[in-house]
Image (tube, rainbow, N blue to C red; front, top):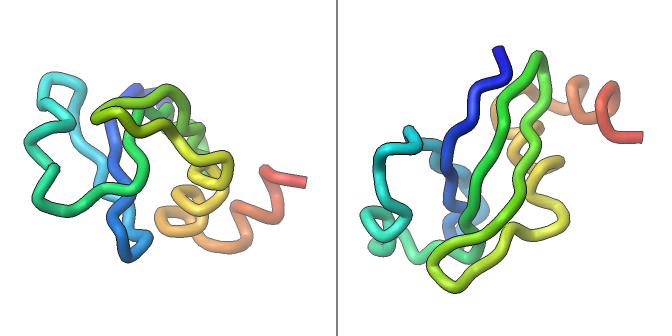
Amino acid sequence: MNERTKYIRTRDDKFIFFCATMNHSDFRSFYPKSAGFCIFSENRIDCYGGSLKLGSMSCDSVDATRQVFGIDAVLKNFK
C-alpha cells in the first residue's frame, strides 16, 4: 500500500486525509492544529513534516492510526 498523502488535524482532533495534489490551505476553514504529510501502510499511518506554519505533532501518527485502523493497530504498531 505505502501511499503518501497529506493531512490536517482539526481543532477537535479529527484527521482529514487528502491527495498530494491538493493544498493544505484548502482546509484552513477546519482550523487545523497540525498539518503535514503521511504514509499509509498496512494498519499504520506515519505522519511527518509540516505545512500552514504548523508541524506534525508527536502523537499524530498514533492518533491517526487509531482513527483509521482502531486501537488494536495502535497496540500492534506502537510499543
